Length: 206
Image 1 (cartoon, rainbow, N blue to C red):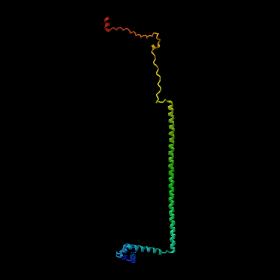
Image 2: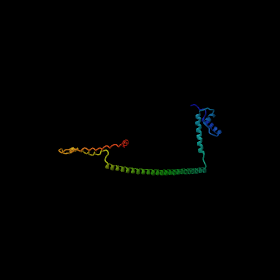
Image 3: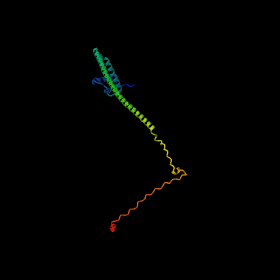
Image 4: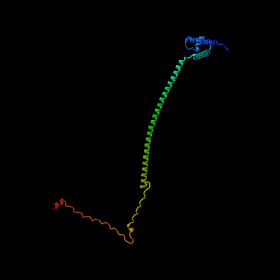
């Protein structure tokens, strides 16, 4: 196995030195440049991240708060929990009241709509009843008309044609001579009037 250029202790020492100088976080790239750019960057990064994680755990275990501070923190956390519960309860109460009002409004609208539909249905039923009665009246009138008036489709029976009267000669007895009707007399014409004498004839006679 090939020996690394920088040891683990050297890498960690260089990183701590840079952290003390800068007063902030140090990256594996900073350590790699400080070491002259030599060595495997991935190895430096893994070592430095592992070292910083161990330091954080050690700090959290080493910090021990005084009893009064711990009591104050516990009281503050309890008060915060109670206040949060109150806020959540208030939000839930307001949402519940809002939902109840919305359901009440929906129920009212539904009742109004139901009453409107019931009124329309009642009017339609009244119209249907009226039309049914009117139809029955018209059917009764049609039945009465068919009973009184003859059916126009069937022709009325033809009246019997009277037989022709026999001639007068046929009604007479064959042994009795037929009486002849006298011919009408001609009216006598009046005699023509004599012409009146003219003025010349009157003067001559004078």
